[in-house]
Length: 269
Image 1 (cartoon, helix red, strand yellow):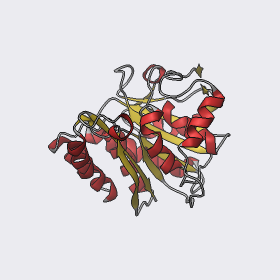
Image 2: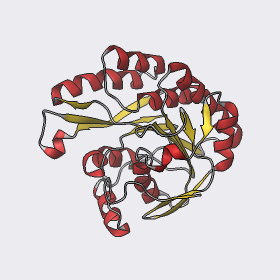
Image 3: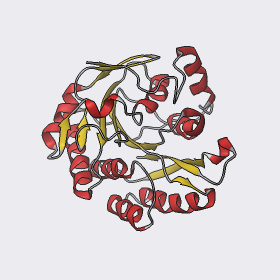
């Protein structure tokens, strides 16, 4: 199945040339690059989250295979939906699904299902792809979206990802991306305080701590469950360090600091 773009012309330009120019505008030049095990990256419209995404992607050596885990905003599909066949069409070209790796995740997880419906209108993974294609034209991807936020489901998916990556990829050959925005529609000062609590748990590589602080502090971080899952996987694969690359809020773009959305970009190695 060929999935057409769901939010081209809304979250980012549908014209390949316009999209190329917009992505390039968000890429800081001459950045030192490193291999990474995982990223945490935002997924709002590029005019808002693009500066954070660009800051992160400009620092990374992009491998051939990307596993992207994000939240289910639409309510469609399964509790954990793995898109395991076909390709995704984007303005810059078509991206093939890594079916072997996707099937390995499905085999290892108790909760994940092969499901296309959850991805049909979902934007959280699609918005990452213009940056990935900018740096690597021959990608394969494994798109996963989570409706469940249960800690056991997060841990199960994280362990399934680690097992699948170990058995189906060469070392360093897969990058995991947790797609999430941070606090939604609160004053800028409140958002920054709440997001700092969440970011501190990511920096500590503490997946249950992130899960708990989001609940305790009522942080409206839409992709906290995918981030928890990716943290579990990264730890199983030997992660030792996380770095905050950039944080900002939508107020820095819109000028409205009364109701902002927070964006954080982190690299996990």
